[in-house]
Image 1: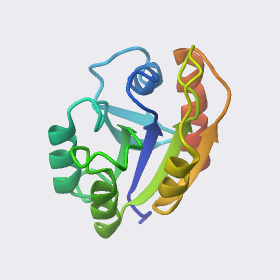
Image 2: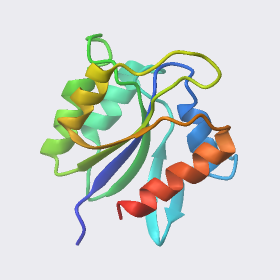
Image 3: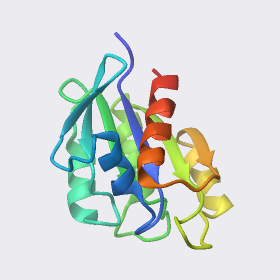
Length: 152
């Protein structure tokens, strides 16, 4: 049986994480499960910069037997204790999840970038792909799907 995995779309607040996940599910924000190349994923849209407490609670109690494959949004803020980013990622690893990070390097339409220190920290937890191009949500959704397919 393949190892359980969590695939994160990564960016700061209002960077297009949720829109990317929405595009991945055919613009339907209510879809909670999606199948990609024959593998079913649970979709967690709210990230640690949307509802930090809810995100932390869910991620720390998730069961890999019930949810072996998860797609989620993540803010790479390792400095704010409220978001508990490193602690959550460590808990997921301890549960046996393999972690993947698809990083939106640049905020859509604005000259703001993910810090190299944040990317380096993500690399300590799993495989990182940094997306330097800037695309509309529908294209991001297709590119994210291609990344997911490449790691199955």
